[in-house]
Image 1: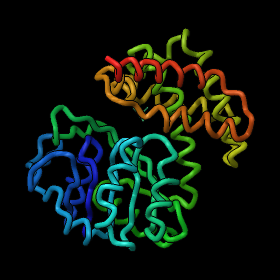
Image 2: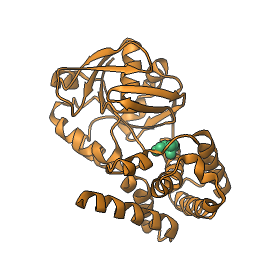
Image 3: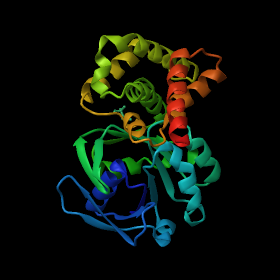
Image 4: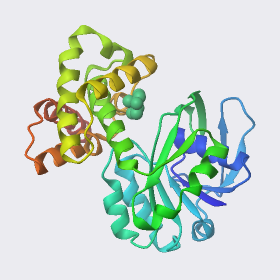
Length: 296
Ligand code: PAF
């Protein structure tokens, strides 16, 4: 397949490398100048891929967008006129809410959404360390994408395990719950994920999860609060040594995904008139830090 990976961060680099290894024609769309990019994962041999080739975008069967949620719309708008109307667009990022605006602009394209638990970080640019084997779930956002289940097989062949979901929204909401609980708290306290198992955070975690489960129920994704809490605890345990993406963003004074994580939750809660004080408090605190950063 002709595949363009938009955003060669840690997860984008991992996918681009694995898809190239699996025999696909892969190119990169990035903010970096240069006709080619050399990517590598772990200690493997680098691969050199075309970078920012408009022809490759026009020929793409699949556009895999691995940018942060807040970057997605503007990046896709910049290459909008080059994307074929039948090209599949797969959005793979933390948080929710981008698909609505993307599907308005790309009204004829099949839009797919995904979430992954692969662990990767970038010790240096264009070099990803694949530190935790995970699972990628993908599914259709619009009716054009309902026939795209085969993409899960393509991705599964390149980087297992990838599973097609008939209801990807449910998987995304579950991931959102984990991100609402772990990301802002670890960022505010500047701690590793594992520190959240300490006594002092339990009441806040309970409250966050309760609020998310109430919103999920009203959105049609009812899940027991206890099950959601266990899921959060299990991620805290499995990723105990890691810093969350939001901790890293705050630490390095980069914009965070808060508007697409807690912010998305708060918008849905408002729609259903649900009180969400714990999530609101974390949202406000992260926004304050972001705003101080952008003024300094
Ligand atoms: O954003 C992150 O860091 C990850 O999604 C997660 C699951 C919180 C683990 O660190």
